[in-house]
Structure formats: structure tokens, C-alpha cells
Image: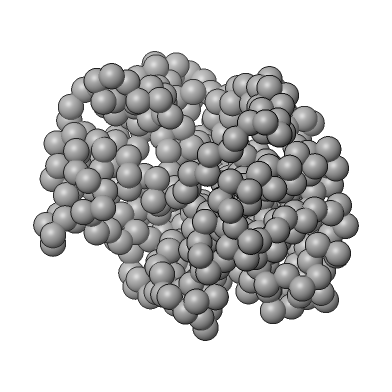
Length: 418
């Protein structure tokens, strides 16, 4: 079942992935959201996905959480507590009042801390209901801040969970495009924490591709990322200069986007250095602008999605959700990258923190792989973010308000500015 199914486009993609798999085509997907209007839209879209694929499954919808959880084998969370207004707006406007600029503000920094504080209690309420209604179900979490949420769930509940993000597989595709190597020919190993994992190995036929990435890092202009491909083969979109700069400094390529990564470290976003924003193409307030565009286009999109005469094309996504469910139902082993508790998986990061590592999935469940020690400078960089995650989780679980301030004090970007 899906919690937060009013995220219609994302729900459509996941439903398309699930019903496209022969072993899952007869599934029942139950949609839940507190917004009945958006839930109705997602239900209509789900029905069109089933019809388009000719699948024997069905889609149900309810605003009753416990009813939705009844009999669930898999629970997929995709909600945003507080929505864009007021919560996300406040996450940007208040820090800006004190001179603290952000780009996305959903993972770390003051915005990430506040999102974590308002989201952890809601996710824990879901897990408490699961413990009563469907204790054996597996929780697939797509909600940010990923590391904080998964850490809180593993510390405070008995629910089996894995946090899912698309940054590992998406960045691998982007890098493959940048160096003109087919992505299906690339073998990689990636590990770290969510949004700050690094490719420890990036190879083709046993040969490292890092020399090609290093050469690309010296060329200008650096790659742009986006959704629309230009006629010259490049992409319209956001600059990738930050993480190519970090590659030059660290020797390994990071998974998360440049606009995200810029606010996880103390070096790029500075009031007194506007030249850095221009040089590295850092889009301040990028997430609010994206949200405003989506809100402005929602009614038009909604009318197209609900139009009974309009066909719906189902295209496979790069999300891991359906792969996990298929592997657990069929025992066809698959390896994904997931966010799980660090139980000796990365030996030079703290026990219990949330790490992003390869995870084998089969009929017996989730099997995270041991990575061992990370390069020490990468582990040190990750620790600066883990400090903030740890203190935010501590504040949420203990109710000790002072740890909110401690988390902000230790945040790299906040400490560099204020």
C-alpha cells in the first residue's frame, strides 16, 4: 500500500512498475492520503494504469490509514508533512531572514532539521500502526530526510525497513552520458550515506573509468543536468560544477546533485562570495521555484490524467520499489542500493547510523552487503553530516529541545555562515 498517494505522478510511476511485472500484475494496490481530492485523482490514474497494461490487478483508495494497512505485505511511504505551504516556505524564509541561503533544504541544514522534526513523529505513528495491523510488512521509505527517518525507525520500532533513493542509479547514468560510455556496460560499487555516497569503483570490463571522468572534469563547459536533451546531445538544466569540483578535490564522484551537495558542505554558498554562486552555477531557492512551477501546472496535469478519453502511456521508471517486491515474492535475487542501519557494514562510520550500501534482496528478505572501511577523507566528510542527523533524531526521540540547537550549530553550511 502507498501512504502519501496524493503524490500522483510518483504513485503512477510506481504502480506502472508494479503492474508491469508478470509476477505482480495481479496485485492489489491500496492508496492512502489525507487529501481526499488528490487521492481520487491517483485512484483514477491507477485504474488507467491497470487498463493500459491489461493487468488483472486492482487499485483501491481510502483516507483511513489503519484500513489501508490491513493485510499489507509492503508499505511504501511518499508523503511530505506540511506540504509546500506553509512548511517548505517557512524552512526557506526564516533562515534567509538571518542570512542563511539554501537550495533544496530537505536533507540537512536548518531546513532538513525542521523537516526531520515534523516528519519523524508521523512516520513513527505509521510504524506503530504497522506493528499492530501488519507487523510482518516491509516498509519501503521514499520520504526525506532519508537518513534521519530511517535512523529513527530502526532505533524506535521493530518494522523492517529500507530507505530508497534514486541518486545512485541516476548519477551512474549521468556519468555514463558525460563520458560517452553505455551505462549497461558499467560496473560500479557505491557506498556512504544518503546524498553523500561515493563511487568506490566505476569500471567497464575491469578497467577503471575514473581517468575518463578526470579528463571530463578538466573540460569546459562542465556537464549540465536536466530533463530535456539538446540537439547537440547535451542536457538543458542545472550545472554539475560543484560535484566535479569535489571530484577534483576528493578523487571520488559523489551521488547527489550539485545543488544539493553545495548545502551539505561549508565551501560554496557564502553571502560575501556571490562569485562562487556564479562560478559553480548554484541555484539558491531552487526547490521553492520547482514547487511553484509544479503547483502552477497541477490543474492542467490533473485534467489530463483524469480525462477518461486520454490514453496513459506506462513507461518503466528507475525506482527500486517494484524490484524489491518482485524479488521477495519470486525469490529472484536482485541487488539495489538501500539505506539501512550500519551494523558493521561501513566500519569507519558509527554503528547504528543510516548508511547507503548495496543490498541483496530475495525471498528471505533484505541482505545488506559489508563494505568495510571507506577512504578516510570520505568517512570524515560524511561524519560532518552524520553529526546533524544524529542530533536531530535524538531531539525527535527524546523531546530534548537543546539538541535541535546542537544540530544546527554542527551543520557545516550553517556554521560557516552564522
